[in-house]
Amino acid sequence: MDKNKGFMRIYRKEPVYRPVCERVKDYKQIFVMRNEHDSRAQARRCMDCGTPFCHNGCPIGNFIPEWNKLIFNGNWDHAVRLLQATNPMPEVTGRICPSLCEYSCVLGLNDDAVTVRENELSIAEFGFEKDIIKPRLVGFRSGKKIAVVGSGPAGLSCAQKLNMLGHSVTVFERDEKPGGLLRYGIPNFKLEKSVLDRRIKLWEKEGVFFKTQVNMGIDRAADSLLKDFDAVCLACGCRVPRDISVPGRGLKGVYFAMDYLSQANKTALGERHQSDPIDVKGKRVVVIGGGDTGSDCVGTANRQGALCVTQLEIMPMPPACRTKDCLWPKYPLILRNSSSHQEGCLRRWSIATKAFEAAAGRVNGLLCAKVEWTKESENSCPVMREISGADFKVDADIVLIAAGFVSVEKNALIDSLGLEMDKRGNIKTGPDYMTSKKPVFCAGDMRRGQSLVVWAIEEGLKCAQAINNFITKNNGKERRPGGRPC
Image 1: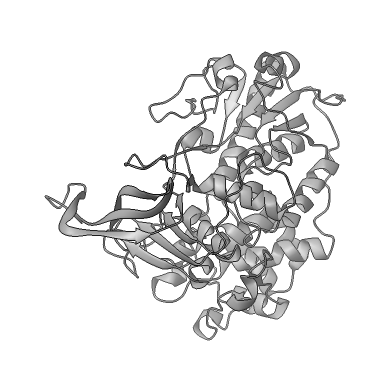
Image 2: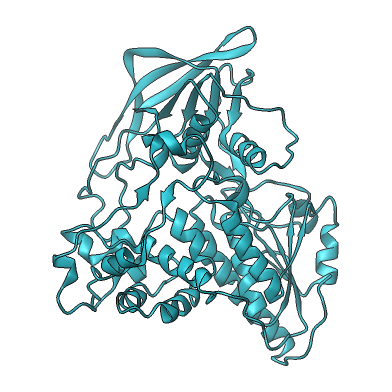
């Protein structure tokens, strides 16, 4: 790495965003791509640690110090190949990953961490621009066919790796286009869908087959998967939202956040949606939930012309810096302001919703209460209680519930296969990702519960390896030409 200790002389350069007054008028990418000079300078800050905790902090084990050194030295071609060795979609994680690696950066102990995510994105986009990232054609086919149900990050990464291992893979998706929540959950201004389409087209050229608008278990019998394929991977996500059981919940104008985001994304993409339009233009919008989904609702509502946006969170406001309860290199629970918050939003913490109030059959406000979280002892869990006399009302024409997800959808596919569920309502598997029904495997949020995109990718890659191990163990390692999938 830099023998002149670049980390002592070069400051961290944060991402550059388009002006708020400009970006709220469209759904285009909110940030400006960094130039090659700045990328090399930021890579120069990497210390090439003896023990790279960033590598350990990354769920998919990216070789971060190695490709930082490569781009610092101008060896972009090698950096692209090294990045692709661990990450099947770095142009996606480089845009939306919360950068677990950066919070594990050794430099972050007493200075600003290395801009790992932006460096990753620079490498990925350089690879596409210079035609380094292109279809890698498989030289052999095992003759085995595998079905992947669900085309979110777990399903896509599983399909890509299985294809590279020589198996014929078909991905089934019930929506109009593949991508799952990458396409229909994450707004375009955070992840333009042309980025996703570019990668999917590349995988199609490599041999992965995509069949969309197939609701498995309804449009196609689940039993046919077991007849037509040698193994099946279920990667349908954790899609049942957590509800709020309070008076007035059934009023018009109260929606789940993901229903709103999915509809907004389809509208922005020119696709049809079956539900009634959720119109927030000129209306007072309240988002219940302070996570990433809630933040995406804030950004989308501002672009759709909401009169004002308020975000309520039941948990207390996180600290600005690490506390003794979450020391380095753990991922800290600290206050984060997203680009959507910068565009206009009133955030309130330690607020519980007690009821939805109505006018003419529609929601027109929330009855809320201030709460506090206290511990009975140092080792006990915090307990919430309402603060007496601290009730108040928040005016609202539209309420979006972004309180997280609780389990997988219990649908015809799961029922037909007779899969065993765990205590949380997700699919139960062994350490080999095998469900209670052979040869059906499961990966991603459907198995581990709601999580991050990068964890879903890690799940898909490990599940693909488990499927490959199962197939080679049960069918030998003979490699022979295979036909097209069903």
